[in-house]
Image 1 (tube, one colour):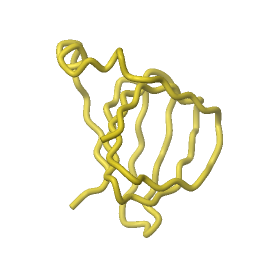
Image 2 (cartoon, one colour):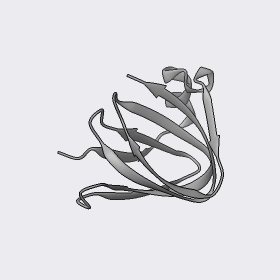
Image 3 (tube, helix red, strand yellow):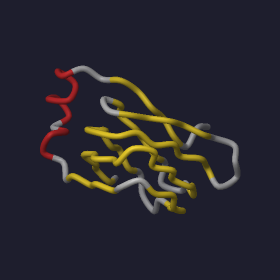
Image 4 (cartoon, helix red, strand yellow):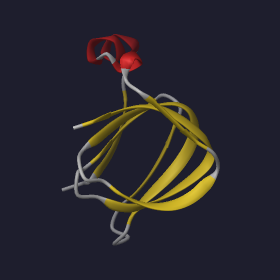
Length: 91
């Protein structure tokens, strides 16, 4: 089962989920290791990044307009190619 998922959603789905009220996180171009203790869903407002699972089994790339979901037990490496700004929700 995939631990990362990228999808596109329309404005009505953004409104339905209340995404615009979620907190915002920003980070510049960088590479870093990360682990998720709980599920995270994020909507990319700006930028572009790649994330690869620590075991190398999964790799995704996402950009502005993508909705990305990370599983709670994921250990990964982020590669931010263009500065990222995203709305996010844990759990």
